[in-house]
Image (cartoon, one colour):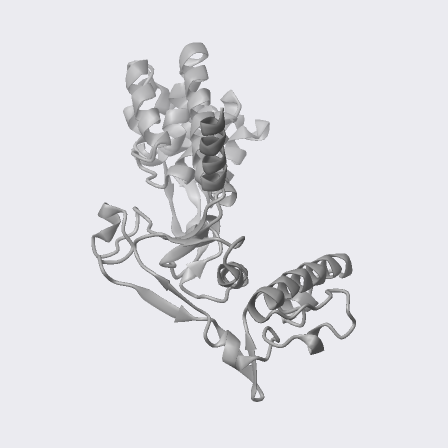
Length: 338
């Protein structure tokens, strides 16, 4: 029982690990390093000092632990009060750990009684830096006060080379070399695509077993090569192609976007799906075409259908334009039935 408790405690501690990890995007070229899940060459490190902003000769370090910082001042009154209490609590603990100076967070003269962690103490803050390479830099805020400082600084944007989360790293431009991995946030971000993919695959399986005609129209709607699908295309081929599409192996190589598009299109009703497929194939076979002024028109130019494919779909769904719809279906359906 005692051994089990030790293992359990180790696992709990392991699950709370916080680290700065290298960030790489396998879909973005980075001198070939992306093929090896690396951000930098072996033995290469990036070291950066804490960001410092200077205005009128006054320096302000981006620490995430300054209640007078602009980002804190901009908070709504209730949020600001909570944030100030959090900052003072952390600073009070750090002041005690690093300078053996006990200051009550509720003290009206709180900032004046600090000896080390005052926002303008250039000698202290200028020495805070972060050195990162291909190996994770583990941070333990519970036992190392400097690690706690670095975590707050990263979340405040104090280090340009480190994104504050995996989600932020994926959205950042330029792409950062590293990101802060706080387990819970990272897991949520990593599972976003998995959830979308699984939802898309459920929709694919449902159409495969219950409505193969709808699946054909969905394939036509999402695949750039829509004309390859007809009513005689083996359903297993369509299934396989859509499985590849959902996994980013088709005409849309962004996996998340591919899954999102498939889910969105799979929710269309049959009328919208059929007309969407019709518009794509009519453009391919040139039964409708792009004309001057950006309009998509019938081949003889008698009818202006819209300037975008979505507008053409809406135009053809309108009962008033049934004649045009019927004429286009008459031209395309022989290809669908072949």
